[in-house]
Structures are given as structure tokens and as C-alpha cells.
Length: 477
Image 1 (cartoon, rainbow, N blue to C red):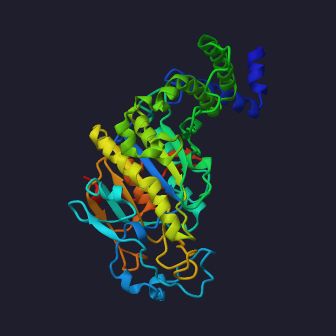
Image 2: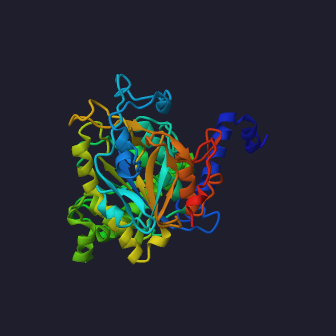
Image 3: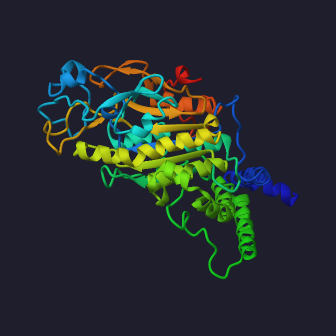
């Protein structure tokens, strides 16, 4: 018998499948390597209203009661017991579940009507008041999560369980970047003056989950080294670096051909992206070309690397250079205690820079195609956590209703959406689940959330999960 025929008859099933997988891996490798590695976008499903998103995530849960959800009757209800009919057997956190009393606490600070549409905004946010005609305030957000980690995981990834892909990763996967020298998804962190330290922020919040690793967010650190080990070692020239990377790529290519693991391709792309970022990032983070007027607009803290204000300015520079999704995580909005002291300090951190970002984008002609989102993972209770009126008292977590605002990117300006009851406790009109929010954000970038899926462990996963999600068309232009 011919040796080849004998081999084909005696080959084991495991060996056959293993070699077949390597063949498939080679084909996949070739298609990816010769199409710009793993960065080829799937493209929008329809014409987008926005090309990019800046998400100003206020980690910890800003108090909608004190900042946006004006209810004049709460002054009269102050110190009265929250009715059982309003609380409705709601699951409470362990921090207030054992309280014998749930007294209503009216907002400590006045609100005023702002802009053409007379939008109610707290005096704690005077700069936000000045952009009332540019923002859409959604007062009827809702989430089932009542604790920070599941809540922040839920709103960022569409699931309270860890391991799912983040919103920014989905956008990178679906649309790619407009600048091959910078990632499609960039993350910036800052610590506020409210609760310090704030709730922990985990890297999985900008992780890619079951999407290729090349789509995870890239964290930029403050200061002279925004990305660790980005600079070449002393004595290494660019040509030497390029030759070394070429050799590393060749080794990884051979390994990918043998095992067909797509994560090896992600490793190749990471090396190549890092090489390109070596020239792009220093120019990006060099603010010397910004005028004094720009720093004045964003506030004095914008000159301090790593501050919220500096990160807002950096976010504008990132989207100017084609980054698809920039997410700021600002910690400190967890006012369980010392609300009267912590909340004004936290608002002072973010108010001027948030408003400045919207103004700056508008005057540069970028706001129309940039969707800005400001908000956290849930709101705060109308009742007091701790003894009513005590300096140490605060507000507990509240997911039944909370507030966020958006601007630009085809969002209706100068508009309020949704309504809560007189206790700012339950939604009575136009509830917006966080699944609806994510579906709407994708829609504005031209993506049908039901069609952007990836097969993983036998299931077609998507950002909005398996339950119904709807685009909130009433807030769109």
C-alpha cells in the first residue's frame, strides 16, 4: 500500500482534528494579517448621527435628588416618614435595611430654572446650568442593581456578571478607530473630593470579554508616562526597535499558524499598536499647544495631569485625533455620610470641566458628531441614611430612578425626559432601562444593537443582553 494511503487510514481522530484546526488557523491568520490585523471594522448598519462618544462616568452614584430632579413638595415633606406605599417593599442595601425610620430629606441646596426651556438644575452646578440649552436630561433611568460593583458592571457591559464585553469594546469591534496610531477605546481615571478614596475601579470595566483582546480599552496614566514601557530603552534606536518587533511578529505568526489561537493575533496587534503609539501619545499628552483661554475655560485644575478637568481636555484631544470612545471614570460620588460636606466638593471637581467640554466641542464644530454622556451607575435615596440632620448623615444607593444627561451626537438639546413621583423615588413616566440607554448610544453611531453580536459558548452575545431593549427615539433629533 502507498505510504500516504496507509497514513490516512491510521491517522487518529484527535490528530486529524488538530491538523484541521491548524489549517483553519492558517487561513484565519492570513485573512487577518493581510487586512490590517484585527482592526477591520464591521461598519455601521445605517447612517450614524455621531462618530464618537465621550462618556463622563461619575462613579458612585450622583444624587439625582439634590442635583436635577426638582420636586417643590419635598420641602413640605422634609422630616416626614417615607410612606410604605412609596417604598413598596424595595430591596435595600445592608447599610439602611436595619434602620427603624426612613425620614425624607429635602435637597440641601436650591435649584433654579435654566435656559430657554427652564430646566431645573442645582446651584451646586452653575456651569452645567449655563449649558442647559445644550443638554438632554433623562430623569427616568432605572437599574435592578443596588450595589456598586454589579451596578457599574451592568451599565458598562450589559450584565451584572463579570466577563462580558464593555460598551467601548463593542464600539471598537463594530466600528474600529479612525486613527491607526491610537486605540479605538481609551480610558482615563480621576479621584474626586467627595468620598476619598472612592469605590474601586476594575480594569474589567473596560475589558473586551469574549471579543478579541485588541478591542479592550487602553488606560492612559497621568504624567510623563501615560503608557508604561512605551519609551524605547536607552541606546535602542527606532530602527532597532522595528527590527526587533519584526522578529517577534514572525515568531508569533508561526505560533498562530500552528495553534490557530486568535489571541496570538491580538498579541501581534498589541505590539504594533504600542510601536505606533510611541510617536502619537507624547504629542497627544503635550498640552503646550493649548492656549491660556482654553485652560481658563476648563478651570485651573486642567493644568494638573490626572485631574478630572485635565482628563476632559485630554478627551477632546483624543476625539480630535479619531479615537472612537473615550471614557472618564471619576470616583467619589458615594455620599453615604457627610452629604452636606462631600457633595459640594465633588460637584466642584466636575462642574466647570464638564460644561467646558460641551462648549469647547461646540465651538470647534465637533459636538454635532460627538455624543457626550454624563452620569453614574444609580442615584441616591430621598430618605436619610443615618440620623436626620446629623452632619454624618447621607443618602443610600437608589436604582429605581436616577438621572443622567447627554449632549450632541443627534440628541435633542434643551430637553427633559421621564418623570418621577414627588419623592424622586419611583418612575411614573417614560422609564429608560440601562439596556435602552446602551441601545440608544449604539444607534446614534449607526449600530443596530440586535445585529452587533458575537458567538461565544454557543450563544449570540450582544451588549443589550437577551431581554428587550429599545432605542429611546423621543430624545433624538
